[in-house]
Image: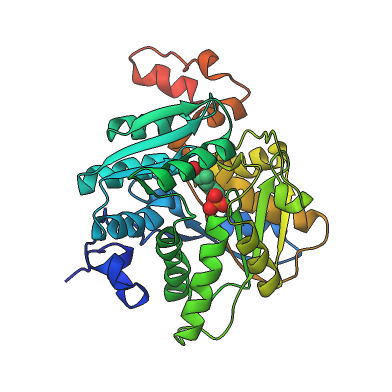
Length: 360
Ligand code: F0G
């Protein structure tokens, strides 16, 4: 009989502790596609990489956050929490709202003013979160959310909550289970830096469990207008079209540096233009529709290749962190059309007219 995927906690129960296992709240997240992107490999002719994309947009709320949220909310239920709170550039809020609804809890999400993709905001509203727009950026929202959780009876479900990292460490388990080994290089976007830390933890735990013998080099990429780790200092006014990673003071900064240094990897930055080029290549060549921030991993690998810094014949996994439908306006903008200007081609209700327009 076909195996119905149970969600990351049940699938990898040996890697979770009782506080998370006792009251599992799941939307059967994880088990996402690992897509062999042969069309992208041809962009790197001389380097001859093998490229797989871990498409996290296929999670229940459309981003990797669901892996962490199932663990954070299960843990919250175990100790009787009633209300969840998070700061978010959008995806965490969508995920927190959904898992709160599933568990029958209340949720409040703090988002920066004016910078949230409409898809993400509509999810939070649909799942009944109280959406509070704070006069500030993500970093300001996280300070308020942290203080709120220290002084009031609410559970913080940002990635500073260790349960979030526990859940997100399962993506590398799936990659190794499918490929039979870790990649040589793992590339992904970096914002608040929880995910790169979680991946590194996961790869290491699987090695300790003798599920693999090697570890990948972790390659993290920030947006150049929001690249505190690359610059080595906080960015007060982070700016990027990749709103998901518009973060100037990542909470998991130290852990990200550890992942970089222990793995022999790097953390670099990519411009908005480089992100948009990668986004277009993912959509048009690999048929993977992700949101702009999600394209930072491919943008970074392309940049390194251009600089002659990409080692040859590597097995590379790139995580695409969130679905394109979260922030679909970019697909239209990339066609040099503003969303409001987009006009479909109007054709008569007639097959030969349609064929004519299609030049058939
Ligand atoms: N990609 C997407 C689509 C994201 O939403 C985020 C983070 C990241 C990458 C970066 O991951 O923070 O673990 O380094 N989004 C958070 C949010 C900040 O609020 O949804 P990270």
